[in-house]
Length: 252
Image 1 (cartoon, rainbow, N blue to C red):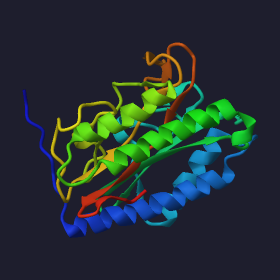
Image 2 (image 1 turned 180 degrees about the vertical axis):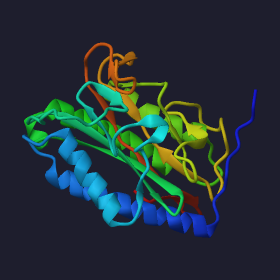
Image 3 (image 1 turned 30 degrees about the vertical axis):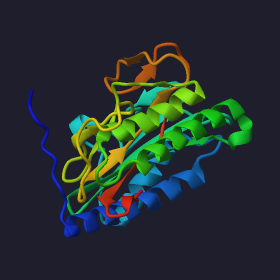
Image 4 (image 1 turned 90 degrees about the vertical axis):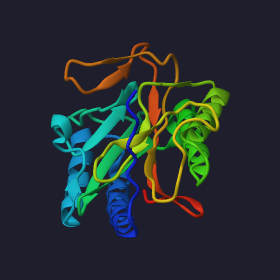
C-alpha cells in the first residue's frame, strides 16, 4: 500500500492561501447576496467568475479535469459536482455552492449551503443544513496539532448520526495547496487516534457531504453531477485552512 505524501506549507505559502481565502470569501458574499427565487444557477456562476477575475486570481474549478464552470452548484438532491445551468431557483430550494480560487499558484476551497428565500420557507431543509454545518464545525475543532484525521471524521460522523442523517462515504475532505486535492484525505467518519497525524503547517479542507435519506448515489449523463438514488436531499459545507498552534485557522 502506497504511503501518502503530505506537503507542509511554509509561512509564505500559507500567506498566499490566506489571500486566496479572502478572495473566495468575497465571491461567497457576492453569491449569497444574489441567491433568491427567480435567479438562475448560471447567474450565480457568473458573479463568482467576475469577483475572482476582478481580484486578479483564477478559478480553481474551471477546467479542472475538464469541469466547465467556475463553481459547483448542488440543488436539492444533488450531492457533489453539480454544473450550473439555466435552472431557476425557487423558494425553499436547498442549494449548496462549492467554489475554488487560485492565488499565486495556491488553492482555496470552501462551500456553503442556503435555503433559497430564507430558512422559514423550508424548516426541514434548514434543520438539515444546520446539522451539516454543526458537523463541519465539530470536525474543525478536532483539527489541531497532535490529533489525527480520524478525530476529525469521528466528530463529524457523531453529529450527523445524532441528526438522523447519513454520510455519503465516498466523498471526502482533503489536503489542499499547490493542488486542489492533496493528501491526506479527510474522511467524514473514522476512529479517534487513527489516520494521519496532524502537524503544524498542514493545510486541509474539511467537507462533510451528507444525505437526508439513504447515502446511495449515481452520476448523471453529464459525467459530473452526482445525485442521491432515493431522490432525497443532500447537503455540503466546507471550510479550509492551516493547522497552527491554536488549531485550525479557517481561511474560508
